[in-house]
Every structure is written in C-alpha cells, then in structure tokens.
Length: 120
Image (cartoon, rainbow, N blue to C red; front, side, top):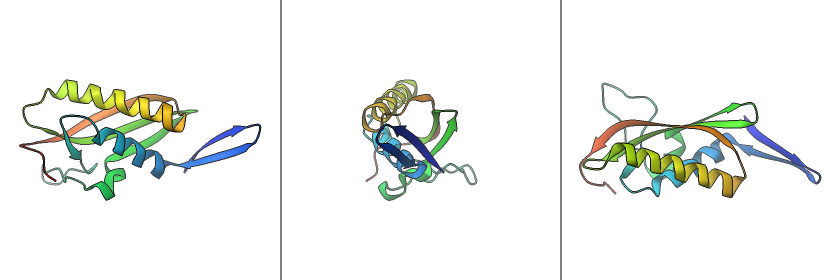
C-alpha cells in the first residue's frame, strides 16, 4: 500500500515502507531510546532490531487522509519512560510534517523492553 498525494503537477506515491523507515530513523535520534523492537514479543523477550530493520518495529496505517503510526521500542534503564515516549512522539510528528508533508493523527509508542546501557 502507498500514501498518495496530488497537486496540479501530478501525483506522488510514498510507500508505507518508506514512511516506516523515516519514522524509525527519527525515533532513533531520541535520547533514552536503545532501539526499535519487533512488533511481536516471543516468550516475553523483545528482539532488538538493527538499523537495517527499523521498519519492522513500525506499523503505518491510514485513517482517511491521515496516518496512524505505531512504534515498538526498547528504552534505556534509568530514563523517564514517559518523557522518552513523548520525545519520540514529538520527533516523529515533526519529521513526518517537515520531510514528507504528512499529517499524522496518532503516534502510539509501545515500550517492549528496557535495557541496561546502550548496545551498538
């Protein structure tokens, strides 16, 4: 599926995979975020995804002409989880608006785990 935009010059189609990658990259810039997690938790363990798989930790859905973005993350131990989640929401919304020109109606952050220290 793609997100479609039209102006007087023509149409632009942006795949949901591209939107998910950009949202994942924006989220990774936030302090306190160790990484993106897989959407599915197996046996109570969240899988930390590498930079090449960021879109696996992001779900993009459409509600009319607006987007709903779900981010599955792992945060660093000792950080304020609410503050980290709010920073992620603000950064992703700002990035979607400024880079892609997209309006996002909702950004949901699902904390899948907590890690001690940042892993590279």
